[in-house]
Length: 406
Image (cartoon, rainbow, N blue to C red; front, side):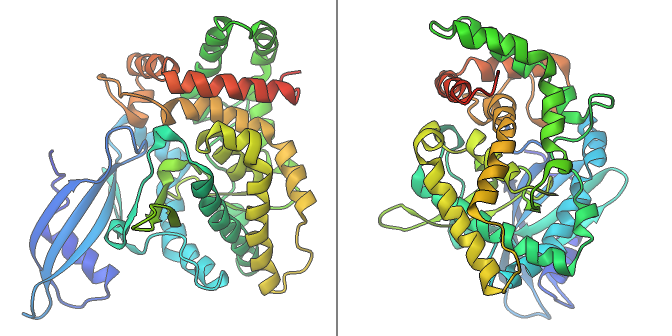
């Protein structure tokens, strides 16, 4: 592993001064390793740094941080700049998440922000390493069971509710977070359409070969030409019944779980990667989650009950602050119905990478998707996975049952 030259002793001394509010500090040793496997993080390289340091000749102490390193000299740099991922995440970590925590009676939503750095070649964000407190990722390929889903959605309910309170204080979030993962239009296609446009046609070809899916395949072929028009309509804020700050990329790799040491049941989760935060209907996060991260059984049999658990925490935060005209459960269910297509988008364009059984030898991440040869290889690998095929068969029947393709 080659560590970028910029991540040197001086860099981390500045990180500690900012993050720990230290006046004088000397780094005595650095141990830097990769913090995520290739393919687990699409927009940056993640490093984990163990920093040994001393203040004013005192005893040596240790601090552990996570470094998100986003080069600007690669093809993905221009894409990330267009999507404003660095600016959005810094503002969330540094300003809004601490206030959201206060508004939710101290609930911890994300990692402590340490510092940022940006020049002509790179953007860097440094934050606390939550693994020191026992938090870790779940296995993305297994999908989340009910216990995990409940923990995640209860936390999301609190975040969404707190953001409605925040909007009363900071109405600027409406304009700062005005678009999310899917941006653009049919006339001016966005990044997602540019790099993921081959996914739905590839799935249609797969469905064509599945016994018993003949009628669904015919419907998909008729549905296909207008797919992106429908997706852009789905993410438009013109249809919002009420609005919250969506995480924006609410899938399993962006949750860190803390477990009971004996039972291994999840006790809490912390959210990471606030790069695509978006002020719009809460149904975006919810449908994206059910389309990418919950096991298909959750979507078929448990979604109603899980939404009740989400709504209970959502309502509780707003009632505790005496929020006027709290959206009802019926309001939420209407939003979910209007945004069902976002579940289809997530399960056909994002889920293939979530369940990807191996990485392409040609490359991975956003840079891989921006290279035509690598993208084709990634697409072939992701679409042919046994687990993806199993889940997609369930999803297609579920969408067809509610006439989504008609």
